[in-house]
Length: 61
Image (cartoon, rainbow, N blue to C red):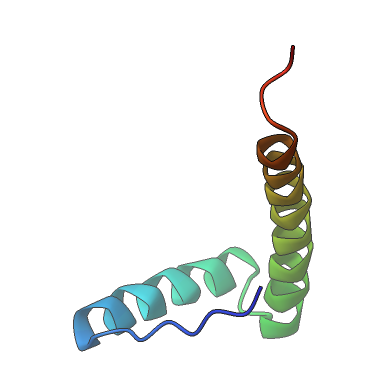
């Protein structure tokens, strides 16, 4: 599910601050931070897919 999001300058600055903190958590190692983000996104996608599957099936009987 591709979705393009446009950010205004305030949102862009907030996103940059969060990204900087996330990289700092990984001691400045951008590659390590990126790998962690990919893993986190994978876990979130699995959970979203499960929720979507339940919605399509409807409520349990």
